Amino acid sequence: MIETLLSPIFVVNWLNKPLSHIYVEHGATDYATTKRILERFPRSEIIFIDDYKDFFNRRNQNFEAQKLSPKLILAKKKSDYIYDGSQFVQEGDETDYFYTALMLNCLYDCSYCYLQGMFSSANLVLFANLDDYFTSVINFLAEREDTHKQILLSISHDCDLLAFEKVSGVCREWIRFLEDHPGFDIEIRTKSANFSAIQDLTPTDRVLLAWTLSPKIVEERYEKGVPCTRLRLENALLAASSGWPIRICFDPVIPVEGWREAYSSLVEQTFRKFPMKQLRDVTVGTFRMNGDYFRRMAQARPSEELVYRDWENKNGVVSHTFDERHEINDFLTEQLLNYIPSEKIRTWS
Amino acid sequence: MGGVNTENTSGPVLIVVALLAEARPLVSSLNLNFHSHGEYRNDEFTLIVTGVGRISSAISTTKAFSLNDDYVSVLNFGLCGSRNPKTNIGEMRYVNRIREVCTGRDFFPDPLIAHEWEESAIQCHDQPVQDSNVMDFDPFAEIVDMESAGFFQAATLFLPVHSIHCIKVVSDHLDTSRKSTKDIEELINHRVLEISKYLQQICRSITAAKPKIHAHIQSSIDDIAKSWRLTKTQVHSLHKIALGASLRKIDFRPIFKKIEAENPMVKSDRNLAFTHLCRELAK
Image 1: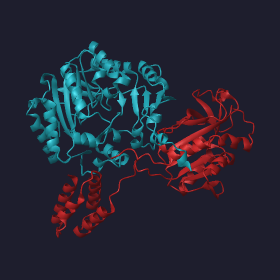
Image 2 (image 1 turned 180 degrees about the vertical axis):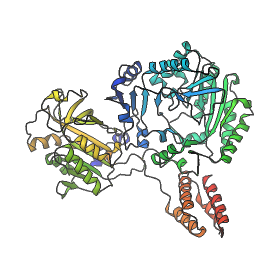
Image 3 (image 1 turned 60 degrees about the horizontal axis):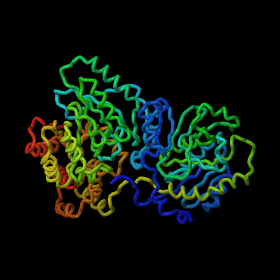
Image 4 (image 1 turned 180 degrees about the horizontal axis):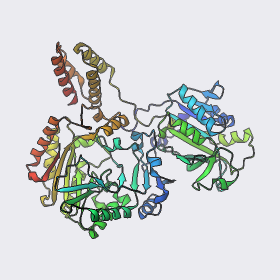
């Protein structure tokens, strides 16, 4: 009886659209970012909350289900604005690498992403109190003892900030802040095709735009909702030709059937026409994840093929074996050396 | 691989109401049969009548889940009061935040499934509310009931939050004078069609079921495990890798054919053959 009541449209549109609901912390209502976003989504349901953790860290959430209709939380970051760089990044000794969590979670849904083990929720948290971050950076720079090393601050570490730029405008704010505050560079890493959101800004050497690229087979199999590599590469080329320094990331390299041919072809496709003057470096890395995150990810995403692979869990890090890692890194390095000098290649192993 | 359930797997839904008068229109429209005191059923739905108050609601919800853990969703349905005089009597509200007044704690359903009603935050009080000033401490929650917080806390022990739903029909503007059974049934009867549509949506599981290896592959793995005398750990690893290979839609036949003749007799040969098989499946 009930089925006859349903129209086909009702059956198809049975989930709310992403960002159908925006949860706003009482303490975050007055920030410009909050106001701008609420104006941009007049049809979203607004729900006021005391603390974002009450919603974000609820028990018994289903990450996989939430990814189908993620909600946005606008919150105020209260402490810990700058973190030491992760052991999983490829920065060399010449750079002091830090990151800041402006946003938690990502619009995209990559099977290999550590965020699905890091957070119990797939909803997006955006911290709206940008000025507090800026003050924290100023204080951090003033108190720093070792001033010889260059500082690189990743602002899109636990998220893809550029993918969300047309909504948040946060990258733009950081680039403007940077103009008046020397002493550090920022990295904006993305899989988006959203360079147009900051294209009108004057390029600066102090902002490193990093694009992660994957071959078609990996992109189709493991990167749900992500713009295709062709678009990402077009964006990277456009940014490079506009004068921005670029980092290209082949990270993680996922060995699938025919991975050598796939990655070799991707390297060729990427660097055939790349304006090398703008290429800061290339990072290469294999799949790796904190062991606890991996365990949680395996529970949260039981239908993801990657969780069933025979990974090695060594010293709390889930990854390929040492030999496999070297095989992958060596192959990619060999391919890259056809186009770029070795000092521009950074690997994680 | 992961993602939305395209197989349309569905399961029974538990409906939790406080009063028999709230239950009757649903029992009738969903063709539920009397099962036991305060419980009505058919293959798709189980409806329980809990009595008034959050403790009763929590206890009855817990009991229902303890007797049957197959429910894919649970819905708390019932009447509520509204302090907003502009809200029409009979309007429906999807509850997106529940404030438990006695503790000041908030609980949040996960509104993933689309619906056609306005949404509202609700205050869950232990006594009927007649004075709107009592609700002033949470100005964003304009409706009030006496069950939602108890229901929600009990339900989260058994189901993920996106499978827990709370829908209310506004029955009054904080006027606690007793309503006749007929009035209550009439209010709900007007909404039965919408509720039935929504129930059809929530009886469908959003995410795909946990993947399983096809029976004939499982049987081959069992044969290998037995004839090679694999250790428990090796069987577990093999099962895991085979599941991944199965998700990648690997053709198992040539791999199994290749190892058909293998019959490792000593431990070292067995371990070598096992490593080789895992590598083939992981390709």
